[in-house]
Length: 202
Length: 86
Image (cartoon, rainbow over all chains, first blue to last red; front, side):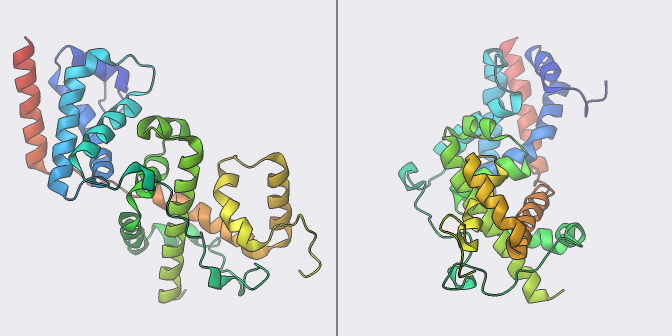
C-alpha cells in the first residue's frame, strides 16, 4: 500500500508490532506540523525538536493506551502540547484573555462607528495575490508575531485544518475562549496582509 | 446612517462579530442583524471577504521540517525502544 495514503489507524497497528517503516511514515506525516506547534511554546528550534522527539517516544511507549476515541492527530497534538508546555516558559494561563485589542484599529472608523474610508476589495485576485510567495512570507512572519495563545489556535484551526472541538480537546480550553483567541489572531493576520498590500500598492 | 434604528449594528461592531459569524456561533437574531448590515454595507462585505481570504491563505502555509539530524536521532530512539521491548 502507498504509505502516503495509508491511514493512521493502520499505521498505528503496525507500529504496535514494532514496524519501523510505519513509524517513519507517521513521523514524516506529522513532524512538520508538530514542530511548528511546538515553536509556539519554546524559545528555540532546537528545544522544539526535542519536544517533538520526546512526543514521538511518548507515542511509541504509549501506543497501546491509544483507544481511538479521538483521532490519532488529536491524541498526538495533545501529547505534544503537554510536553512543549512543560519544556517552555510561557505566561500563566490566567493571562489567556488579557488581549482585548480591537479587531480593527479604531481610527479606521468615524464617530458613528462606520468605516471612515472605503475598504478595498481583495476578491478579484485574492487567491493569486495571497498565495504568492511574498505574501505568504509576510503571513508567516505575522503568524510568528501573534501572542502564543492566539498563534497556537490559528495554527491548529487554519493551518492544520482541525475542527474547533478537536482544538479545544488538544488545548484544554472552552469553545468560547477558543473563538475569542481565534478572532484576535485572524484579525491581526488580516491587518498584516492589508498593510502589506497598501505599502506595495496594487 | 444617522437614521439608523437602535438595533442596527455599526461597522465597528460587525468586525468584532465576524469570527462568531464564520464559526456559526451567533444567535439567530444577531446573525440576522449581521447579515442585514452586510446587505447594505459594501465595506463590511469586503471585510468579511478579506477575513475569508486570510483564512484561506493561512491554510496554504507549509510547515517547517525536522532537521535530518533530528530525524536520524528519532529513528535511533525508535530502534532502541524496540530493542528494549523485545
